Image (cartoon, rainbow, N blue to C red):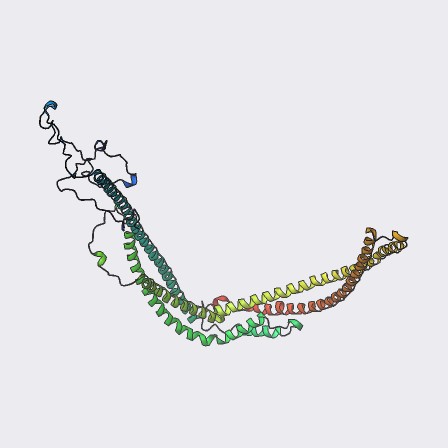
Length: 490
């Protein structure tokens, strides 16, 4: 079954054809519809300004007199001929039923044609609205896509500019680092003796403090770094020269890509701001069939991304190379100075930890002594509490004993009897709990005495370690070579 209002699938009945010589007069005046058809105005959304006014004037029928009437023949009523009935015929031309069915058929055909016409008008209006909205939506989507494209180009432009600036800065930094590496080749022998002396002094720690801590690890690292510096320095000098060539090649590719992005951004931004009222729009027949593209969004983005990734790889390699050179200059610049600071920081942290531990031991020792005193007072309080429960238990048991002497029926298991029994059990349970707590307190007191002796011994060990790290080792490390010579500026 077809739905009314569908502009694509609706089926319309065709009215019966009229004679070619009959064209109903039509007018757009409201007076032409008076007394002929009821006026039902269309809704505003169904107004049809594009329809011609030729077919909207109602046919005006002027009935003429019958050709055989007396008035048409110019006869007066008195001179009219007598009407002769032809009732003797066996069959008439039509019957009243035929006349009624003919009228009903005409009515139905008229209603069908009007209904189909109305459906066609409504569907056409809907189709026009749909096409207008679809065209508007398509243009909005195209504008949105152009805006997104402009944003994409701006994004990649910013990424290229940022990466290009970073690459230029990295190339300059690597050049400066290469020059510094050449000047700093001879500054590699000063701090080795200091590190070895520190290791020897730290072997004099005692007890639990004789550990392989972070300070000792950093000292071994410092010794290994200093011994390997001269051998690595010449190797990294050659690597720096090769890396500069690669950096300049990646920089050239990004500059060329950035120039293309700027041209494309200018064109797409112009297209994005074009409107239906713009002056510089025109027809370009067949332009939609011209495909001059050589890439898709994926390959377009991948091309720039590859250039950026190549630059990032070269820049990362250059940064890593500079870091390695700086690590070489820790013996002469960064690695020696950075490692020297790392060792000093480790020493400082270790001294702080030892001092904090020493202070904490003193605090715990004082708290332990205070807790021993409190525990002794607590033990005495528990013993007194146990003694105080004796009279209460005696009273309760005496009451129960006296109540067993009540005569005959007076031996009632009343509320007082039940309360006394529960009181005896509660007091007895309390005494047992206090006795258990007394035993626990006495055991805890012995543990506290042992902890006191351990803390006093550990306090002596921490004082010795603090003297070695703070006075001996840090005192020697104040004579480390100057920063100017280690950085290769001299």
